[in-house]
Image 1 (cartoon, rainbow, N blue to C red):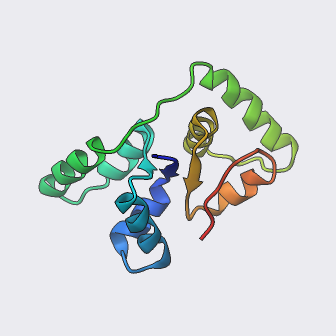
Image 2 (cartoon, rainbow, N blue to C red):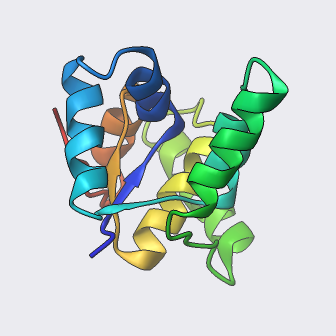
Length: 132
């Protein structure tokens, strides 16, 4: 059951220090087959490779993960959610973070992220976050 959408920030922490709390959680989730990704996260992580060999390894590793795509009405939903966030005092929601949120909501996924913006968005949107 691939129910956890691991955000770019959590992947960065995992690759930086697999013995960190977040790194260990990602490692366990991978072992349990619970991790999924999105094309946006793949681009963000894989394009950060330091050399061609790392790029190809990351590309293969991420290609092996289940991938969830954006919902059909994502951009209309983006308009509504971004306006809602702004109207509730959270005016700097990034487009990439909102893409991840909308994909997670559409596919009923839990988000794992070290980005505090997701915690702030959770207060306004009905997000399911895996907090560590």
